[in-house]
Image (cartoon, rainbow, N blue to C red; front, side, top):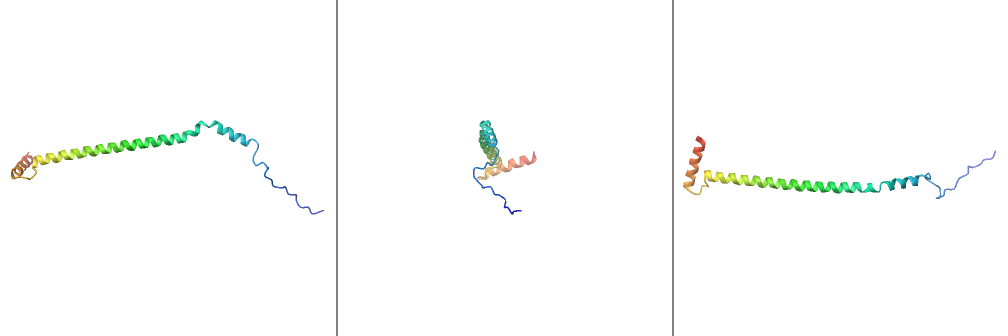
Amino acid sequence: MKNRQPTTRPLTTSARVHPPFLPYLHNASRSKSKGLKWIPPLAAVVTAGYAASSYHQARETAAQQQADADAERRRHEALMADAYGDRDSLEALERAVAAYEAQRKG
């Protein structure tokens, strides 16, 4: 018996690393989904537009509510100044005391 070393195969770059049908399957799957590649960017644009529109509408609503609250506060302050006087003169104070007494009794 002779001591033989196992034969080694040279490593080359021309060796196939995939089965012969794999490149064809990969290209076939890409050609079918050409129209589908636009769905994620389109969904992102639609979502961003909806978010911007909702934000703008919420800000307008909040501004309108604030303006309504300010107008109501000014109206209430004007009514209070008319009813109780603005304390600039003695007559205004006397009218305010009379109005307060009438409101308290009634």
